Image 1 (cartoon, rainbow, N blue to C red):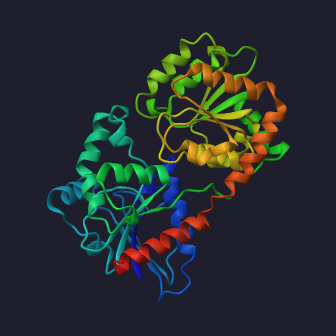
Image 2 (cartoon, rainbow, N blue to C red; image 1 turned 30 degrees about the vertical axis):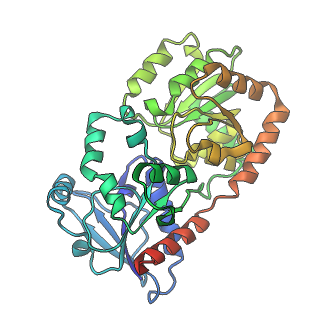
Image 3 (cartoon, rainbow, N blue to C red; image 1 turned 135 degrees about the vertical axis):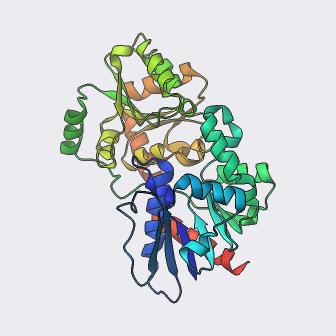
Length: 378
């Protein structure tokens, strides 16, 4: 079976959840391709003035590269307006096309697309006008209706898709993310090193997400204000849409001297940063999956998360689940974590056990089966 894989989601300079999902899942999928007679992949990319991401696997018996340098706006406009060029015209003959994220694509081949969440449908107010226009032009409803099959990152996202489009559950498989191999309990020296790097001298709660309204970082700040003592709130993540409102909220906080922003943190520092924290605080209003809670659990860090959308599915009984609209409830959970060492140990052990349910190998096997089924039209 010959599969075209769209690697454009991997082009993010500072990768977030979707880009990491694409890179790690594609890598795991290609690792399974030992015989070109049974599985062959063409890695399609379009990036005017740029190259493939550094971690794209090298060409070989089961892997071909198809790199193009069209201006992206021109390519996207042509696909949206005229339905051309077909991706198979650019990448070469194939049996099926796989999109790790919704994107501009024209094809006459069976199509499989991954859906990470339906936040653009459920909460359009969390997106800028430019982002809403992008989704309008991609036409996700039309794209998914004509897909031979769909990969959803969680059961919650699968249910969202069914409710939105009325599609049969048989067309949708859950292909979850997993934490990378670098996420594991960090040793004492690694923790000391990351504390020195970021100047973290005191105990702290960690918020790890892009700075944008949907992540409810202002809710975490409001809850933190209810805690006394010297504990810090450390917020790590790149700037997203309307990030300035979050910065203003922190600057106006009576606890502002104990609130720290680290900016984007590279993958190499994340496991030790998780391990150094009292807990990860993740009160997002809506998530298709929620990678930071899984990464934190894999590192043995207690998790406090919203019970909204998919987060309860991911965290389960291995963390403390709270109402994202109730700052007092979140503050109480944070205070319990801070005061009760036995609770921290219990949640750490439970998180490590739960995280073992997820692996990229398992997800790659599920995607491989979905691609084969879709290519055969069954």
